Length: 256
Image 1: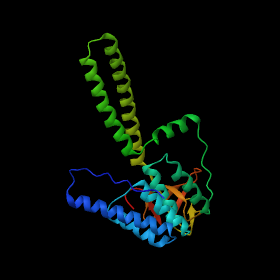
Image 2: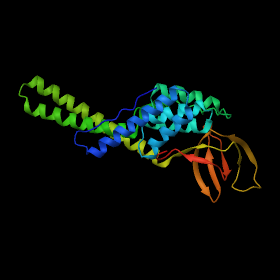
Image 3: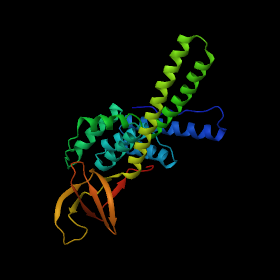
Image 4: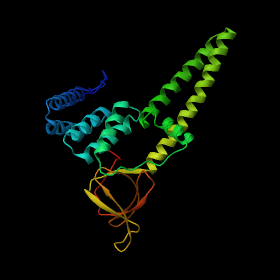
């Protein structure tokens, strides 16, 4: 199991330090419960951390694994998706998420994508939104540092080296800013959720006289669009769309 990394600043107040210590202790107790096969207890301890407002990819990952061991398909897939939001390129998360998806009844084939689209998505998913923000700040400071070295040095060769380095960093910074804006826009405009209904009908229109297009089951990931009273328009990974009524869909946005 993974260990939660708690970064503590020396300027934090004692109460913050105590809270972090308590969180780490609870996390380790959850890990111990998991390793002892006490999966329900592990879930309780991990969710206790979530209730306190803490989140991390490691926490969601361990919680998803615990639900997987309890054969709770929807919960397991939901928390693996939450972990992927924070660390989209993590190999362990993606592998275990695939195992959880195999437990779901609906085997939804993903629409084929062009090489350009795949490359674009991989670039955007290299980091989470927070990760891109950290990278932008780091490159901005590095750019200022290199520019200062360029101004300070007198030797033409060294000045040229730092000038080129500053120029390259500037271009990378602009590119990173663009990607961060695109990722933020996509995240803001697109809402995904996980179905928790054991079985639900998908209708062609938002009324009970319309045609039933297909059935969906617990654990299926859906993209959510328009809502009309008790009806919700959704799309699944293969591009199929329809309306579901009074569905139990838990949004992947926000905590928990």
